[in-house]
Figure 1 (cartoon, rainbow, N blue to C red):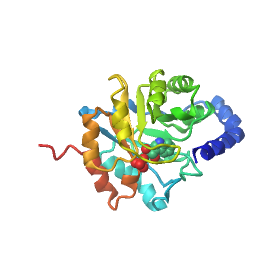
Figure 2: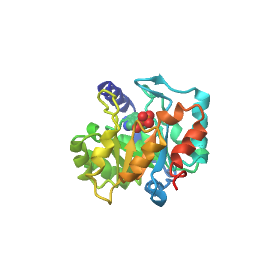
Figure 3: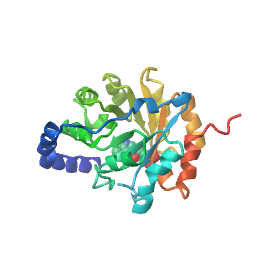
Length: 259
Ligand SMILES: O=P(O)(O)OC[C@@H](O)[C@@H](O)c1c[nH]c2ccccc12
């Protein structure tokens, strides 16, 4: 599946890559950016990064178009600190245009989730106005430092996604300030929430960690806080909730019932 997604991405870049660079060079003003790193670990709590996820390659369509459109405002009103927007079109039914659409409705910073394999996609990310960009370490075995540095030069906050110890070490060899530990194995899409708990201990304090995938409950959030995470990225549990507002509030304010 991942190979197929990447192959499709390569084709897209082959046809649009030149346009992106021409548009970037011709652009006189770029969209203003918002601080993403500051939205993490607010008051020592695990920030909720709520994901606008319409579909997934495994489960297919998750919610209706109408409900999907309502997500960003519900997320902001109920305590999310940032929004993750999937821009991949074929397998996740996302769109690059969603970045500006979401930013026009809420004041939260936005993370662009896509499969970044070519530097030109970072220029595109800047043109789209995304405040942060996901860089999947597995897809950038040689060039991860270059991609991190290029994103930083463009003013975009890179979030390096890792799934094992090897990739974590790769991430720590770059100047990234944020690492996302994905509980989902992108090769077979299985989720094991122990992955992030095992790996976070190997990260020094100056790098902030985001736990990604399979997070569903207040208990999960409390556990992530104990392990020192700065944020949790949650998609499915929010978009498939019968009451999205209530579920968002429950996870964003997970410490509310503490004595
Ligand atoms: O829906 P979940 O289990 O809460 O997971 C969200 C997020 O981690 C997942 O969508 C994701 C993690 N890394 C990605 C890379 C590309 C697309 C999507 C993703």
